[in-house]
Image (cartoon, rainbow, N blue to C red; front, top):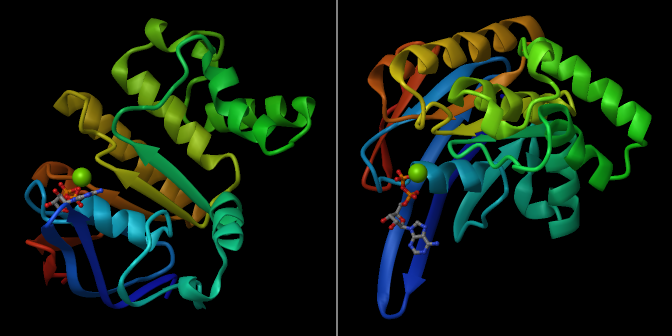
Length: 224
Ligand SMILES: Nc1ncnc2c1ncn2[C@@H]1O[C@H](COP(=O)(O)OP(=O)(O)O)[C@@H](O)[C@H]1O
Ligand SMILES: [Mg+2]
C-alpha cells in the first residue's frame, strides 16, 4: 500500500460555522494505481487530496504514505518528503507568465538548490516525456491550454515522484484536450509505475482511471 488513510476527519471553522469536510474517511491506494476521486462540488475532494499529500493537517485519524505515518513527521520533514517523493498538478496551471516553458519547469529546482546546468538538463528531459520539446522556449501565453497543462505535468515529474496528486487537471480544458492529457497521464503511469491520484468531476475522465473513489458530503460512498 502506498497510501493508507484510517478514520480521517477534517473540519474547517469560519467564524461560528463549522464545516465537516472529511468525516471518518478510510481508503487504501496500491502502488502504481491510477485512482480517480469523484463527487459533487464541495464534497471534500480537494480537502482529501491536500490531507493525503500532507499539504493540509487532519483533526483525527491516521495517514500513512509508504508506511510512514504523516503524524510522526515534523512540518520540515513533511515538506522535504513532498519535495522528494511527490508531484503536484493543479487545474489552474500555476505557471509564471514571464518565464518560458523550460524556465517554468526548472524554476522550482533552482529554488531548492539544484545547479543551473543540472536543472536545465532535467527540465528538458521531462519536457521530452510530455512531448513539449518543440515548445520549450515558448511562454505560457504562446501555448494552448493542453500545452500549458503539459508544462505543469513536466514540472510535477522533475523529482521522479512515487505519487502524483492532480486536482482537476483537466478542469480548464475542452473535452478532446482533457482526453489527451488523461492519455498522457495513463502513459506515464504505465511507463514509470508512478501512482496517480486524480480529482475530477468529469465521469469520462474518471472512467479512464483504474478505480473510482466516490465521495459525497465528506464521506466515501464507493471505493470499488
Ligand atoms: N479553508 C477552508 N475554510 C473553510 N471551509 C473550507 C475550506 N476549504 C474547504 N472548505 C469547505 O469544506 C468543504 C469541502 O471543500 P472541498 O474539499 O474544496 O470540496 P471539493 O474539492 O469537493 O469541491 C466545502 O464545504 C468547503 O466550503
Ligand atoms: Mg476541489
